[in-house]
Length: 124
Image (cartoon, rainbow, N blue to C red; front, side):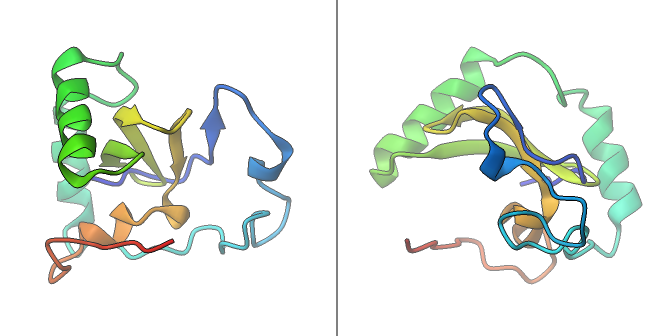
């Protein structure tokens, strides 16, 4: 997982509950700008940007991976997430209508940290 930056939820169907408020917290209660930083953040971001995948079109090969993951784990949502400086951007997504979310709301921002577990189980 690669988490990118702090561009807040961009949705195909924007709803009021997903907009960011003019305060230190967004409407979901997350503190704006509060996420862990990788010890080699600048190098990580450089490599991520070198891949030139951010903000690109959906790709059938990534979509096959996402569909396979959803089927194997029997889950309704599956994503290929790239973690930018302030957002996580989805190269492929199944079961979600957004293309990106704020990094401060991203599980992936924690998954890219050294010592993070290989598998995150998120219970409802």
